[in-house]
Image (cartoon, rainbow over all chains, first blue to last red; front, side, top):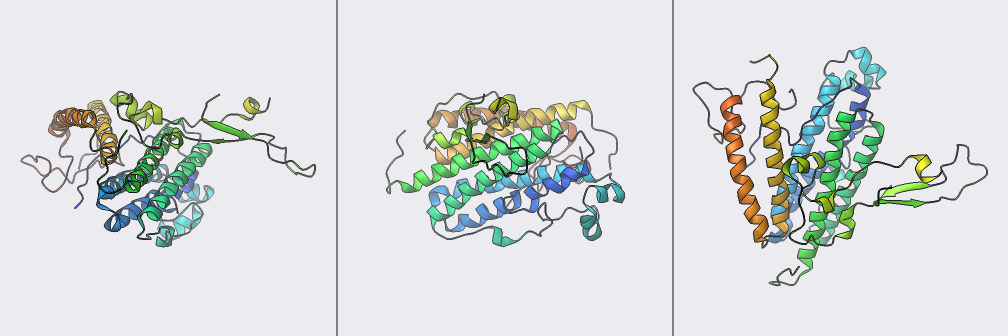
Length: 189
Length: 73
Length: 88
């Protein structure tokens, strides 16, 4: 069961009307290392991971949906009042032809989201290493998005999301350490 | 200069078509040096934590890529 | 359907709540891998109490934050009213 909360995890403020940025930001909506892929990856792996780390996968997977909503908010705000002409100039003509103002799960190059972006091997170590890699790749994507953005308010939200990837990576690496321990052994600090 | 950045000088050919970037940079976030977070680390205040995206200063990574002049004067 | 801009107080309270909720998210992930850290658990309890107070204040002023009976609702059904988080 999931319960929706009627608020964003972090404020999203967009100060400049620049629909071109929406075209880039959509990478983190429906791209290979985006928030949708992350949420689906963790919430699927949790069924076959040792019980000690199910909670972590559940909680990080849930947080990823909050991040997906933040990205959606950015795209929504950047495009909602643009004319078709402006969207065309921003390189979103192809998007408009198929989806009008609707958001769609595809990457910055327009490739539709595919579940082949994510893996589930059923081997706890292999799965957690995929998760760590996914977090570092998402962190890198946020860096490139910050580089492409000159809206300081938008950059602020992207920096928040980037730092979350750093923390998630930290927790996944701790999960690996927990699984490396022998049964019953306490983690000593 | 932010301590999280690393630098390297890629090989340059006399036939490179663009103005060469002699020094390239990449970032190594602090989580790479913390195998398992020790208990009792300092924390940010709630407002500061939200603004920075983490509760722990030791895990905070600022992303401000260095300008070309800074790393290759 | 409300179409006038939200008052300053909405943004202020929302931000206070976001800050406290964020600490709880961070402590949750931390406790998932450090379940024996009693100091962190103690802090979790403290922030949970702050969250309760702020949530109550926010919901009294601006309506329910959670669906499916997880927030108090008044005499009028306001859950499905605008604005939604991506609109404000």
